[in-house]
Image 1 (cartoon, rainbow, N blue to C red):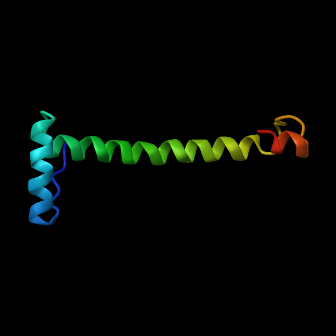
Image 2: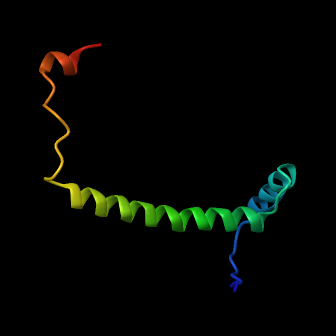
Length: 74
């Protein structure tokens, strides 16, 4: 099932986006659809990462703390 949305944008922005989309052999609809999917998915990935880091907090030790010389080595 799809949902139709309406947004208001500056005319020149839309014209510019249409030119670029045409040059890239795509449409503004396809670009917005992909952007929205990425936007929604990135939030899910961030939430999963946050949950993982909280779960591992205090359970995993990365290693020793680097020495001052090691941190300043170039």
